[in-house]
Image (cartoon, rainbow, N blue to C red; front, top):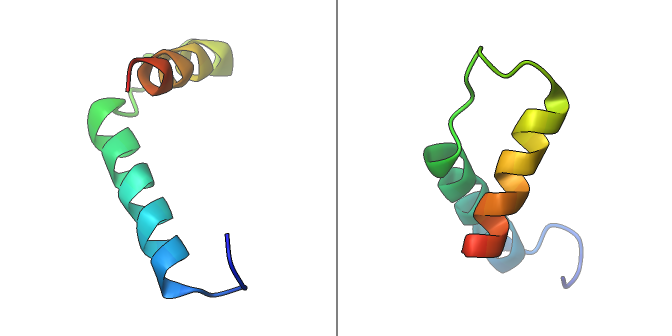
Length: 47
């Protein structure tokens, strides 16, 4: 990360979050935060 508000850094993070939201959809069926957390970690490790 460079200086605060750098457009390149912001674009990279926004892209990462968009991919995360697309591939790990928020479901009301998540019983606990731990289930969602485990799913996100699994997705990150596979990607």
